[in-house]
Length: 258
Image (tube, rainbow, N blue to C red; front, side):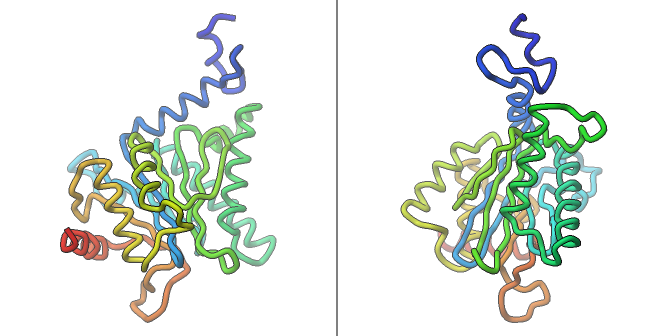
């Protein structure tokens, strides 16, 4: 079999044991040219990503890579937005089915494992009816605050691999972001400080690796364990996206530190 023939099907291994279609899926993650990252704090977890609106005629509120999967679990999707929405729909379905069956919300790690297992199946065989469930071209970073384990941060990729992280990144500047976060979290189990400081760490990391001074409409931030959306005291274990005003407050705080 010629070398080019190995990539005609997602389940054909090359003579070197490679799945070229899965490797193409990883390349598709970077083709969107959007870098995202996740950081786990002591009492919260945060995901951040760039927000790019391709056309001035597009309504910016309809462009997002941050999604709520269940009341307490959210994610940032990196890569093809079409594949991202299909994967998010499947994740929401899995979380809702788990809630219906067992009477409590699906934990973040269980959901990450389930989605990774679904992706891995499609490296073995193809079901054309459910081909849209294959998470091709997208990486999913999930966060939650578990009642027993505390803040959770997991990432699942197109090959079906998943793991828990202190901090992680996806996209074209993934390695640079990981190097930055490794230095900041060296010998630490999680990012220290309040939710504000964790968000600021994430924004600073993204800003440094991309060499960009962000404006409030150029970022998306999702958080669990942050301030309550209704303005009352205490922390909110439900996932929500920060408003542009809240993002602007963090950007101003970073500017004042500098």
